[in-house]
Length: 58
Image 1 (cartoon, one colour):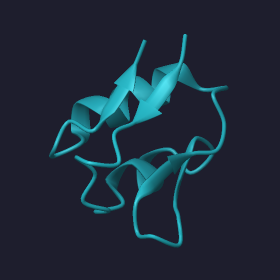
Image 2 (cartoon, one colour):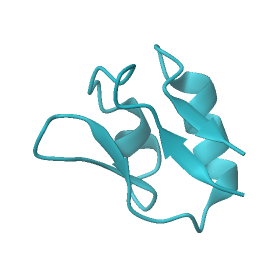
Image 3 (cartoon, one colour):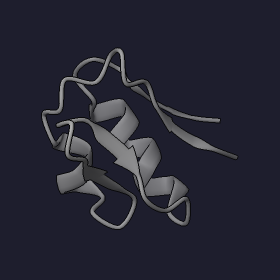
Image 4 (cartoon, helix red, strand yellow):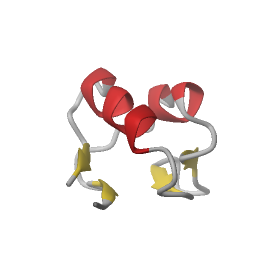
């Protein structure tokens, strides 16, 4: 299973990073980036909460 963030869709709102700080961070470009794939359950919740549906958990 892989956690991915679509940079073209991400608006950098920070919802995922605030929900799952151990999985996501906002990078220097202001976009979300995956820092760990350890917590798929939290990542799935963040994907559902993402306002632009930029996160996929395969």
